[in-house]
Every structure is written in structure tokens, then in C-alpha cells.
Image 1 (cartoon, rainbow, N blue to C red):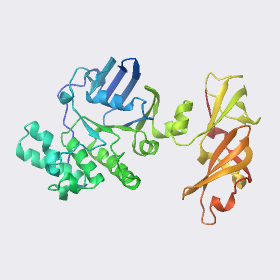
Image 2 (image 1 turned 180 degrees about the vertical axis):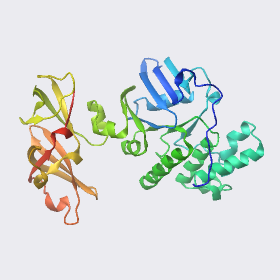
Image 3 (image 1 turned 90 degrees about the vertical axis):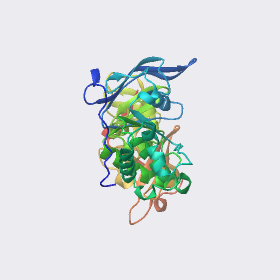
Image 4 (image 1 turned 45 degrees about the vertical axis):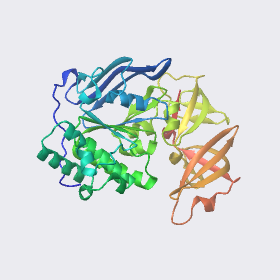
Length: 375
């Protein structure tokens, strides 16, 4: 991909009240379809050059939000600003954005170069400039040698690269991507994640990426907005969203999280269903008698001889184990309907499958600071 030069063009208008570093701002944006509220008064600011992901389960409102940014849907309420200028009433073809779909949407009767050049030709860009920009865009996505190929002659990953080149060649201020890797197999999807992030860094264009894949969002994004039932449950850097979820939904949706219900007894102490009293930092405004959820990630849990003095410790029986190659996932029954999942890392000596049989007693532990209390 070295040597390719696909640079975003300067916007025609000024930055208005959006500020020089702001690509997109959503102000109390709501979208209703009849009595159903798909997007519920969300506020977001996305910086120029940021790789920003909208993450959530099906029906959470992420794709509807993306379609409003593209102009395919009109907000019921609120404002959308692109580089400081309101665009709620601006049609899609007049917005300085492009969209990449999961289905590729390529023209089968055109070769690769023809697909990439399609938008430029419609805008009557000079022929020599079209040829230069198409060549640069294809080099950027490592398809410079497939310009004359038909889409039917390409793999799924190559077709997705063509769709990406077709969007980038127009020099949009913002590129919108609606689960673009969803149709690819796991190995190719992971390869494309790395390439897509690299391309975004090279061109410096703002990417707004919709996905339901938590691992994908964590590995690619500068920031993530986790959506649930039309609202933004939490927005922040991947590390913050994963390590410090602010509510139960986020903790449960991002990766695997153990949740133990309990009642606050005093300053920094929670009594859980098993009868154990667990030390954990309490969130602001949380006091004695409040019902809470304790969240601890499986990779933060030590097993048996790795449990150190000063750790919170609990015991139970192994009820299942699942081998994942680099680790084994162990589910432990603590009694009283409570379970914990731990990830035992493999070593050169033995795997957890060799150590833990179903029904065996096992001790688990974690440092208090690795346990979050969620209201």
C-alpha cells in the first residue's frame, strides 16, 4: 500500500460552530418509525480523522444512526452537523460522505477500474484525473494488478476492497461503513480489520463503523459508542469501555463478564447471594442497602495456586470447561445459583483440560480493584 496518495478534499463550507477538529456532531437526534423509537435523543461528537464505531446488538439503532448520517433517513427530531454545517435537510448526493455496505453493491458489467471510477465519471471529473485517482485508490487497497478484472473473478475480500476504493476515490470527509466485513470468513475478516485500520490511518479520513462484533470494535476503534434500545449506553476509548463499563448492559455485551448480584453492606463491601462479603470500590451515590451487580472479567480471575494473599477469594465446583487453544474457559458453580467463569492460560507444561475435571473443587481469586460495582 506504499506510494498510494488518496487524500481527503477540503470541504466547500466553513467549520461553522463545529470547531476545526470536529467531523460530526449529533444533537438530541431521534428517529421514530410510527410508534417505534429506533434512535432516542442521542448526542455524539466525532473528531476529524477518528475511527469511531457504533457497537450494539441487532435493533439497537446503530444502522439507523448511520443511515441518518448518510442522508437515507431524516431525523424526527434533533440536529446533525457535518463539519459544523447542519445537514438534516441536505440530500445524500450533496453530503461529503460515502458509504460502504456489507453487500459490496458492485456493478457486475464493469471491471474493477470501472466500478471505482463510476462516481467520478458521474461528476464529470476530467479523464486524466479519473485515471490517476483510480490507480491511487487501487494501490491503496492492494488491487493495482486487478484493474481489468470483473467482480465475479474476485474473492469476497477483494470485492470488499473494491467497494472501499470506490468510496475513498471520491475523497469524502467521512466514510460510513455498515458491517462491511460481516460476509467474510473469520480468518479473512481479521486480516481485513488490520488492513482497514491501516488504510484509515494512511488517508486520515473519519471512519464511522457499524458492527455487532465486540472484538472487531475493540481492535479497530479510537472510540466506541455502545448502543442499546436506541440510546448510547456508554461512549469512550476501547480500554475504558472494556475495563470500566458504566452499566450492566455494557459489561455483559462487551466480551465476557461475570455478574454477581449483591447488596451493599457498608463502605466498599457487598454481600452476594453465596453469603460472601466482597470488597470492591463503590460508585458515587451508592450506599448501604442498594442492590448492585459485581462485575469481574474472566481474565482477571486467578485459579487455585495463583490466588494470592489479599485477593478476594471464593470456592466452587467445576461444571464445564471449553478449550480455546490459547486458554481454557472454566465455569465454576459457587452455589446459591451463582457462577463464575475464569480463563486459564495455557502453558508449555499442561493445559487446563489436564488439570480440571468436572466436579472438582476449585479456588478462584481476584484483586479488589479488578471488581466493578454496577448499579
